[in-house]
Length: 213
Image (cartoon, rainbow, N blue to C red; front, top):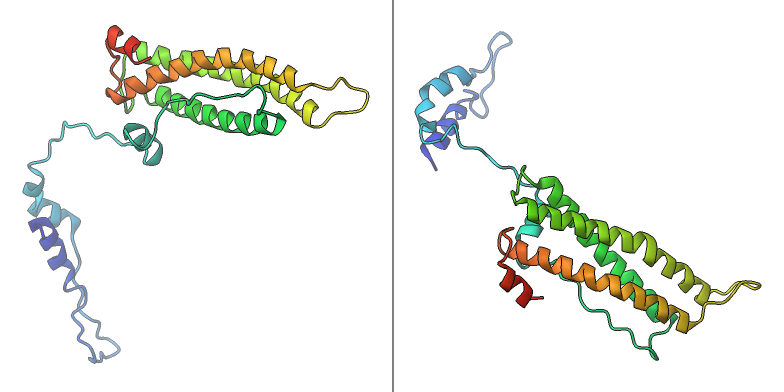
């Protein structure tokens, strides 16, 4: 126990002078010890001499930020998506789209979190912030436009409506090829973000960056 903790404990030991089993008259009250904040701080001001009053204290958001700072808890990597021209049917496409969308939305949310934290909690240069913003914009475009169109056609394939043109499986594969082109660019962007994260948000040298992509 530290000296400061011992002093606080001793101040509270005599909160009541009453002993177990002792009875008090109507006018008699148990003796109480009152802790004076003024006397306490004046007596123990020396206990805080080692604290640097000019030292800034950084408060970190508990889960979200710590997850980003841990090299093992989170990764911005976007795995390759394998689509087979024969075996990938409508149901398989549904699984792929759902999994990929959830992952990209999660990455995008983390990237937005970093942008909002910049200069408040984490500090990185303009190049990293620009990379984050570009990646967020491209990911939003993919999810809100191309992926939305694909979902509509996928639904027409799985749930054809009489009188409407049915989307064939070959059509889905053709649309996915367009998504895959955009996805590859987004994957490279998130890979760059991941490399910066692993270097404490420092931009890797150009030769090292290109070698890892």
